[in-house]
Image (cartoon, rainbow, N blue to C red; front, side, top):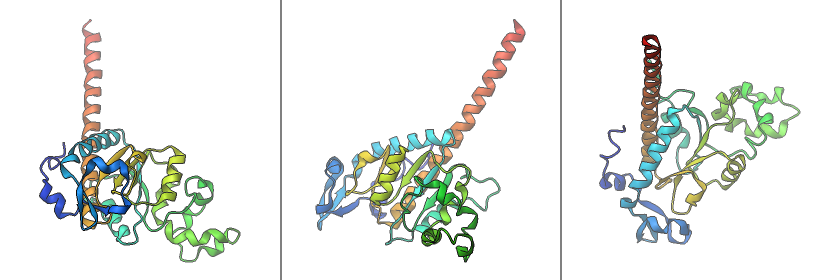
Length: 255
């Protein structure tokens, strides 16, 4: 179990600016029940009401990771260094001999700009993967020159050649085009939900401020702990499965 999950307090959440939402006129009415009020024309989350959704999210993600489900991160925010934040999360345990976060969890990410039709037109973009790291790919795709502008945006899909469709998406921004496309694919969404977003679009919600670096780092820390818990569940499930197999064989042998 996540040791720090029940230990972080409201003071810590305020310090990382998790309680701050968007301006009053941008409110999504579905979030009214989670709000404490407004200050300086900015909505403020009632942090006491967020513990229950966080618990649902933690245990839901933990169960997903116990089955080794993969996810794709969509974090496009021009006001934040999203490339740096996502890469910090991906390389969190790279130096350790046994990676805590394996490639079977993180299938890919999009951090600069959403490419319309990325997954709906996957047959086209799949051809680009072997050439993503080339400085001058024009020679390889003269016939598809109109797609060359996407090359600087494709560094996050290098590992999607064999398995393009993740089991769920993690949504850290407010890109409506990306949201509509994912809904067409009918793939579950886990979202960092700010006060101007519709929570019904997501299977699980992490309520908070998506314009705060500290908030996003905290979300990634939260996500990492769900992976740890999920891997522990996976080990225990395998252990009990193996134990029951041995027990059944012994019973058959005794009879």
